[in-house]
Length: 413
Image (cartoon, rainbow, N blue to C red):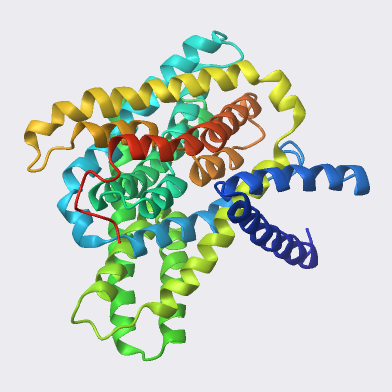
């Protein structure tokens, strides 16, 4: 693809993302929903008018979503999270994001494997890949609703914090499972755990190092533009250093770099103004998030819906079951160990609020077409995300009003 086509493609994505966001505000629906619909219309227009097929079998989006979109999405979420509230709720968040990811991935994989019942065409490795990418949560729309309705700040940080660390751990698990699946090699649980720890912790250490260097640079340079460029360099530099040079988790590197720089900017005594930084990251994250959902619409084919609808329903049921098991069964067992237990009404919202979005889609789009079952896995990921957009997200306001809104003095600001 020539540089002219790449730039034209990027500009088109950004413009359509802006239009779709306006449509979402106009019709009072999550902005990701019109993004998908606009993507579908664009795909049909390209096919009918120019004969261009943008289906997953024709165009590979791995590098675009993995090296361009994911770093800024993860870094932006880490940079803007409220660190003090995050620290106070860290035990519950890490349980949901680490133990919860493992439970969700394994339970979803098992239910999907049994539900499809075709070991030859859909082996256990395919089920594990599906479970891993479906374990990543993305409650952006829910968090906006929580803030708009004046829900408790603690509930918001539980969802935000879980998603932040959850995405990182799910992506690491996904990468390890995919690596073993493409190598066609058997691996024991001990070796898989060792690989996870090496990739996860190595990425975290890389992110901390880059974040500390970036924090020093923020203090060294004056001016908003310099600060914005430093943060942008840290976001992509940490990711590329971890993935390309050190073969560890680029997502964990971007996450920890974002948290370290967020601490520098959010400290009360730090002579750093984060307005320009926040604005730049907000623009990039908006463009990346919107582009991912547009790509979903563009690559969503009628054949996928007609030929894989049963697999989609199996995946939706598996994810809902696994989420309920984590939040309504495993989390209450942890409550006696927490200084501030997670109350029942919060757990009801957390159970339904484990939505899937940009990260799940990015991982699905990154699957190599050489895998025989890639299309089926992508169809299930799309099905779960569409269920999130059209069913889960619209029902969240009523659930919030019923369980938590107006019951707590600890409000989001």
